[in-house]
Image (cartoon, rainbow, N blue to C red; front, side, top):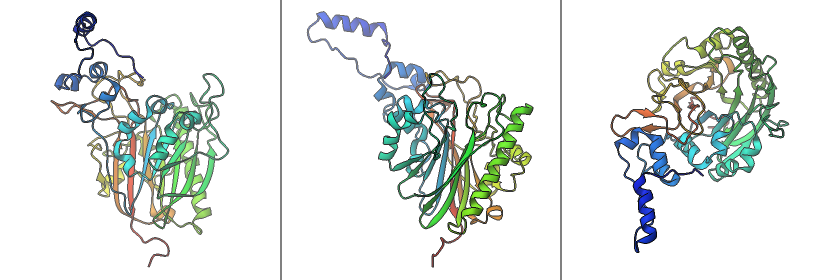
Length: 396
């Protein structure tokens, strides 16, 4: 719980007077949420209780995120939780804001950087998600546990999936550790893993990854970092191809979805984004559709997928919250890629919806978007909803 500062000297005086004046009020009412507070999330955080801060009817600058009806479709959301910060610091409030109404429709949640599974299992998130209808799955044979002080990232993929009730886990597809990892990530078990899920009579192959960060995450010419990510993408594609080929006779895939933190940003309005360059250099562009391709296919864009949107959105204010760790440009590089039917033998997409999502705070006067205070604001998430354009196996 947060520690509150005195709101102003008059409040202190009123408390002192209350000790000697009979009938004096001992509690101060919540101040009115006005334009000034809406422009200053940190000041509002200090002025009110934590309960009031996350009360969307009182704190009107909070904007819950994407809502969708996924009947007949399949939705995957991907989010880098960054060292479990959203999980171990007020999970319920923060995740409700950062995931928002995505929870109402996402069949699969892909998380990266869950370096200590105990934080998820013991500290509440697993139970909270279970209450919302989600089951948890981690790579079989791999358990991330903070058994050494300060070594939570050692020998750990940090990958977790949650799947919603009504979407069943059919088969786990194993974990493939990358052979080329460099820079800050050499001590982590970077890799790719996947599973087959079933919904409404169709099978969906879903894969989760976190590519090497190295010394430069932007695919901007650092040879070792760029080479590692290209190798990671090549190994991922080979792993995904093999898994689909080995299982498609028993479980014909409606779609293949590949999500995670690629450490190379995909821009929905730029054809030759860093993410697309990564696919090209890894000879994977023929296998996956990406955000620019979604727009070209007439995708329905979510409310936060604005022109020029990138997962490393730079924001409009400095990150001052206790959970934030970045300055300047913010964000990770989460994206959900859709396997091309011609490559994997899947259904064409009858419709695609796509968006980015994160904690949203819009000021009351200018509608300028700001980072809230009590959120982990370094990372942005993405979601993709796709409706298959062919019948389920065995359907009349």
